[in-house]
Every structure is written in structure tokens, then in C-alpha cells.
Length: 613
Image (cartoon, rainbow, N blue to C red; front, side):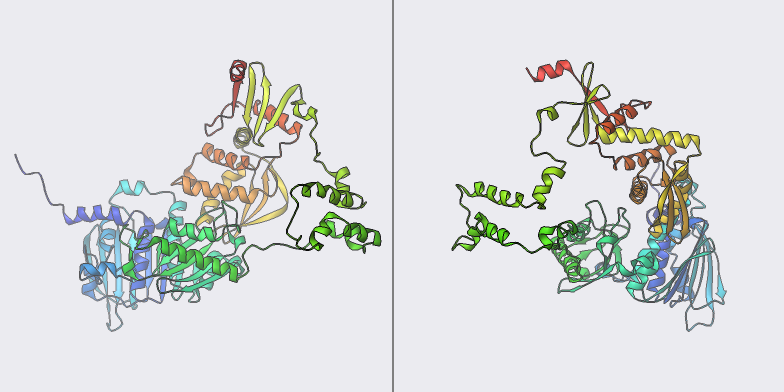
């Protein structure tokens, strides 16, 4: 039998390695920007064409490379930072020149121009598919100018698996944002298809945050600064009103390297307990500094996931630091001791008490309990409760007292009549509202129970589908147009969604950088819900699909219907209950939601008889 095991050629080995290191254009952007930072650059430019598929170019004014180093940087396993295995656990730099260049060169056409300060001329290298086409002296500026062209040109299958330009640009912007946040002392410029997207001058961390996310964050930031022997924390968190329903504006940096850690995120969210809604996400940009020996950054190829020696201690320090900053900046919940305006207008509050009122109050049970010796914290168990009747009678004798007014104005009766226990009679049907989220009605075979939210979802879906097919849906104009600001990473996504949203009744205009104006909403949708629905829709599309803009129209309508069904109308009125039933059974498919969940069920009379024995 002939031997069948062969060594892979360097070219094939590099292409395989590229699949692990360079998964998409954003991966190359990250590696090239980190190399520029390690080169000591004070100004870095990122140039993108066709979402990185045609060109990724990074220009820096760092220290540059010698001709020999420039050539060696494209070799596999080339490094300037690691001499022994222990060095892996003490690296503080982002990466090292040439860490991923060999992988990039295997799947792209690359061009490198570089010069050191003490050299009169630099070096110019052209590489295609790991093959060096040329290397020659070249007159260029101090620093490095590297271009990656036609990514995956020689691996068509990999290129076909790239997502839409919107999705790839969002990933590139994610990487650019993380690195720009970590290095506010470096000037960053970002160009896409010849248009300047960002020009971030050197400045403070706060100015960098405002430059990336918009001027609205100028007054939404709360500083965090804590130093301990174990952990140093500094950065900014958002005020409670900066919390959003979409993720993506949460940044942890460990020793200046971006990381993702659900455990630490939970510690921070817990610090906001009682300040933001349960399903909201707080904004934060926090830098954690810890001894590199106490953390393993090599548990994941991208180094975004790390393992700490003591997770619980990290949790406790972070939670306490955020709580301290919120309290120090008066963000902790407070109790409002002021009286409401309605109570303040009552004559009994505004007018002085008469002698008759004073005498009546002093002779009462409550006054005696607190004025008598050793009675301030004691209530007689035998007749204490009955004494409260006296207090009620005293209050009821005052014409303008709220208790007296309640007897004529309250809509909630003190005793439920027996008639209210009977089913409500509406349009010849008996309908009951159960637990606020279900309707029960009679049918010939027994009882039908209907999930209100799922019924609304089915109704909304068929309404939206009808509007989509018509293609010319009128919008319901809002009284006050909403200015809707999104994260930079979401701007492109929403821009691509605008035509589809317009077909179902949204009138949304792009109003500038990261800002949109909502002037119209689908007919039948309550005004004031548009921001929540758009937030929820973006969140669903970003995190439930790798290619959100390529979702079929039906799936988008399902998600919009699900969001709209969360804001169901009040079902206390019998007319609304019956209207919902009528609308549901006018649908083409009333039994299931568009997502496949059951809307209603029937309990037959025989089952009811069996339950009662």
C-alpha cells in the first residue's frame, strides 16, 4: 500500500489558517488597526470600499519597518513580541507585526509601503495568494500604508458566504469603534466608498464617546473611577435615561483590549436595578486594569473571551463601583415626599382647622394612642382594629375629605354585586376577561379560551400583509414627529429597511448622521409606540439573523406583528373584547399566529362535566 499522508504546502496551509483568523472583512480591519497601534502611530486612517470586499486600507504614521522586517512579516508564525512560552501570559500590546498578515496574503492581493524614520527610502511589497510578486525600494512617508484588495478572490466559496454590505459594514464599524474607544490619544479617520464617516481628533475619553455616538451623550455620561490593589476601574456609564432596548452600546476593556463577559455584564446591570426597565440595556464604556497573570486571554482565538482567577471578586468590585458612581451623582432612587396638586387644593389642607375639628381629632383613638404614655408603638389587638372605624367616621364627617369624595366619585365599588359574577352579555355572546390576558367565551361544544396577545399578533400580521401586498399603504401622521437616534452600527441597517417599513405604513426620513425622523406610523397603531417598536425590530433583526436585510418580507412582518402585539389595548371594555373576537375570526387563519403558536383552544362540555365529576 502506498503512503497516503503528505505535508500540506505552505500556500494551502496559509489558506486554511486564513479561515480561522480572517473570517470576514472586519477580522482583517481589526488585525491591521491593532498592528498600526503597536507600531506607535499617533494618527491612523481606515479606508473601506465595497464593505471591505474590494479594499481595506490602513495608513499609519508609526515607526515603520525595515525591508527585511517588511518581508518577514508575511511569513507564518512571524513575531516580534514572543521569545518564550511565558511571554504569552504577559502580553500587554494588541498584537504584533505579522501576526495575521500571512493569513491575509493567502486569500487576498496585498500591497505594503513602509519606511522607518532613519531610512531615506522605504520598501514596497506586492503579494498575491502568498506569492511575493515584487519587493523594491520606494519613496514613501514614515510609517506603514497597507492595502488588502479583493478579499477571498482565490476562495470563491468563502466570498459567497459573506453577508450583505450593510451587515459587513456594521461589523467593520464595530471593530473600528472598539479600537477608537480604547485609544482616545490617537487620531482616527474612517472613510467608506470615498465618504468621510468619522474624523476623531486626539482628546479625552468623554470627547471620544461623544464623537462616536453623538452629541446627545454629552449630558448622559456618569464617570466611574475606583482603584484597589486587585482591580482598577475607570470610564463612563450612562444615566438611566440613556438605557435602550437594543444591545450594542456596552463596552468592557480589559487592559485596554475589548472583551465580552456576560458575568461582568450581569454585575453592571444589577447595579441599575430599580433605575431602568427590566428589558433595557444600560450604556457603558469601562476599562478594567488587572495583573495579566490573574487572567487568561488565550481561551478564545479572538481574545474577546477571557477567564479570571477570581470571577466573584471581579463581580463584587464592578457592581460596587457602578453603584457608588450612580449614588455619587444622585442617580439612586429617591422617595418623593411632596403632596400631589389635587390634595394640595383641598380646603381641608389650605384652610386652618376650626376649634371643632381640633377637639374632635384630640378626642379620637389615634391621638390618644400617640399622646398617652408608652402608647406610641402599641395597638390593642382586641379592639385596635375596631377603633379605626372611629377615624373613618371623623374623616367622613369632613365634606371635602377624599374619603367622603370617594363614595360618589370612585369607579371601584366596595362590594361586588352578584350580577357582576355573571358573564358579560355582548352581541349575544358571553365573554369573560381572565387574568388580564385571556378571553373565555361560550361556543356550541363548550368553552373557548383565547390568548389576547396572540390574537392581536394574528390580526396585525394579516393587516400588515394586506398592506404589504397593496404596496401603497397610507401612513397615519403623528402629531409630534419623533426624532429617532440609533447607534452608528445600526444606521445602515435601518436605511436598508426604510423601503420595507414604508410599505407597511411607516413614514421615516433619514435626517443626518445616525438620526431619523418618524412622521407617520401604520394605521391603527397607537402614537407614542413607534420608538419602542423600531428598537425591538432592530434588536430582533440584529440578533436573530446573520443577514438581517436578507430576511423574507414575511419574516419581517412576523416580527413587526409580534412587537405591535406587545402593546395591546385595554380589554376591560366589553365592546373591545367582542371586537377582538370578531377581528380574529375574520382572519384567514385565526387558529395560529404567523409564528406557529396556538391562538385559541376549546374545552368541550364533556371535559367540563368530567372536571366536575
